[in-house]
Image: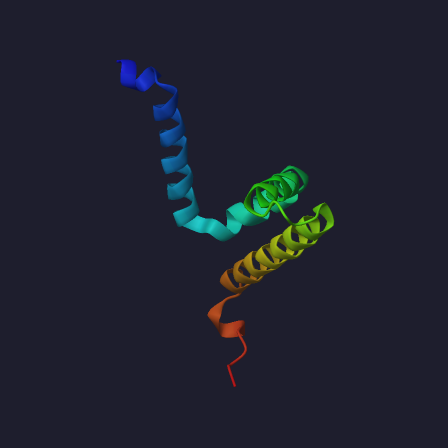
Length: 94
């Protein structure tokens, strides 16, 4: 079938697969990207920020991307640690 050979269909299939994987466990995927692909993701963030905000300097884009990525990664690692902790060992909330 020509639909299966079309490039747009492959891109759409990969996008849908990625969304399904993200829905299953987003935190694990974020930590995996951090461990293996931080630099390419960081460069991609800076590039996309350049497209979105053309009037922002390179240094400002780097700062925003770095802070945002570190925050997302820290939240994901914290959530994974909370999942790994058994309910018995969790501290009671105040």
